[in-house]
Each structure stands twice: as C-alpha cells, then as structure tokens.
Length: 418
Image (cartoon, rainbow, N blue to C red; front, side):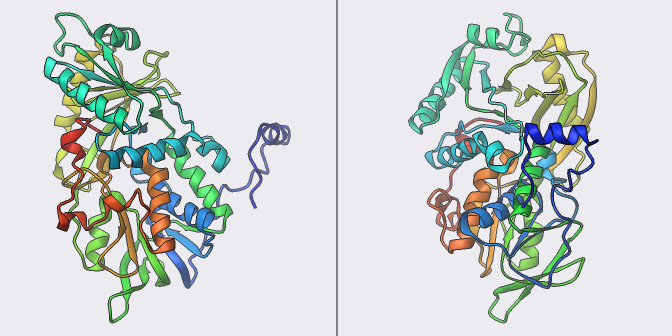
C-alpha cells in the first residue's frame, strides 16, 4: 500500500532532502495472462482499471500503453470540464463526471487541481440569444444549473473581451455554468495511475498491441503485443483516436473518424481571465492556467489524420479570432502548440459498452470532450466489463444505436464547439 500524500509527509520529506518518496506507480513487466486487459494508458483506460479494482474488487488487471502514461489525448487537450449538454442522456453522463471530479483529489489522494471557475458561452446575434435561451431551458430541466447572461454581465465577467458597438464579433449576451472549470490533465492521469497501482493493477508502458487472440467462435482470449502475447478473459479498449485501428484488428468497423484538434498555450501573464470563455461565432475557447498561460482551442482540422501536429490555416483562424475578440492580448507571445487525435462519431456522442466481438468492450467516440468525461467513462466501462450489463447511464450510448437509429445528436443540439 502506498503512503498517503499529506502536508506532514511533505514537511518530513523536505527535512530529509526529498530522498524517499518512491515511485508513484510500478513500471510493471507483463505477466503471461490477466483476467482483464485495458488497452490505453490515458485517463479513460486508467480510470477503467481503477474502478474495476475499487468498485468491483478485481485485481488481476493490466493496462497496456504503447507509449507513456498520459502521452495521448489526456496530455493533449485544453482541460475543460463541464456538463452543459442539451439532451438528458448527455447531461446525466457528464454531470456524473463533474460530480466525480469534485471529490477526485480526496478519493485518489492526489491533487488534480480541479478549479470550478465556470464556463461562459458568448452569443453574438439575436439568433444566438434565442438558441441560448432554448439551451439554458433544456439544461436546467436536465438538472444542470445554467443561467442566461446579459451583455453587461459578460463585460463584467470577461473585462478583456471587446464588447464595443464596433466589435467585429458583437456581444449580445450568453449563458454560464458555474460548476464547470478546468483540471490539470497530467495530474488526472498520474492520480489514476497511482491509485490503480496501489490496488494491484499492472501498468505496462511501451507495450503496443498488434493483434488479438481469439477462439474459433470469435471470443477474445488475449492480445499480441510488441512485448509478446498476453492471455486474458476480457479486453477493454480506451484508445480515443486509435479506436478504429484496434477495431479493425479485432474484425469489426466503428462509425468513427479521427481528426486533429489543436491547442495553444501563451507565455505566462498576470491573472486576466478567471473563467473559461467560449465564443459561438468563432468556436474558440480560452482559459488561464495556474501558471499564467492562456490555454486556447478552436475548431478541428477538417480532414482525417493521425498526425499530432495540426495545420497552419486552423492555427491562423483560431489565434486571429482570439486577437480580434481580446485586443489587449493581441501581442501576447505563444510558447507551444500541439494536437490531440479525437474520435468523432456522426452524432457527437460517445460509444460505451460491448462490441460485436465477445469479450471485447469499448469506450470511445468522445470526440473533443474526452477529458471532461474521464471519471464517468471509466466508471461506466468498468461496470459493463465487471457485470456483463451496461450501467443505466451508459445504455443509451451503446454501439447498437447506429443500427436502431436512436442517435443522441449533441452536435446539432448543444451548439458548443468542444
């Protein structure tokens, strides 16, 4: 059992030169077989392994990651956490995640730096305001507290935003969810890894899955990896933009297309924005990290890609829109840029549960919203793997909806860009 992090532990280690902290988790060697293998060492994969152990008492579990823990989308996003979705099914799912995030630091004994600074969505026309009123009504009826904002409200909340009569993107008002916020992406991955390891989960890095071992009737019995074959009874996939690659290896197709989603971080500034701000007109969103850097995102690169770099036209459009809307920030310098590979499905809602291959389960399709859903995604996939039945919150998000037509089209409904 790992020692608990605490103020007393920090003081004690400080007095002894910080020489005996120990590794946060073991760098495990693969065993010949496990009861359950989770493919993907990002937030969703680690959370699934953790909840399998914590909530369902399973211990013989391995997490296989082809690179390093948190090196995929978990470390390549803009860290926004919210639940202001239009449909009841989505609202319940994402609100579960927000509620789990609120107590995650205590549960994991790890500071994930969850800051509930709220999210403000800006409307730029009369039609935007009409749509915003409809969205706010739906969100409140779903139990997600959201409120309308006037132009003056937004001017007070976001003082650097251009709300003048001559603004290129005029501000009419908007709405806010105050429970929303941001967390430290690396800390979420590290916290789940440490907690899962303490419950006996083997975390195996630099272990790429290259195929599946199956019986004559198609049931999964193990995986082929770059470090040799590993047997198992059940497999969970949590690999985001690589979901189609693994599904193809297993012999079925997913309604998923992978795109690059860029993000940008500026040089550190004194505090200028105390919330997350999203523009309906430009699709850009911005917040300020605890280090002072502006964290900025925008639209997808609209062509399929696995390249974690993005393209210049999207970068130009995103940064240009930020400079137009926040003139005082126009000459701020940027430190770095990256792209995550997001898994987009036709209705912009996730896929959680069993696949056509017996013994193989999947958590994918979060698109640009995977980070905010990590605790919920892990909880729900773990439930299905352990019990064989979908959790009631996950049932609407099964793969079967693409044959029945029961889609949950948040892309058309919520009007929110990320």
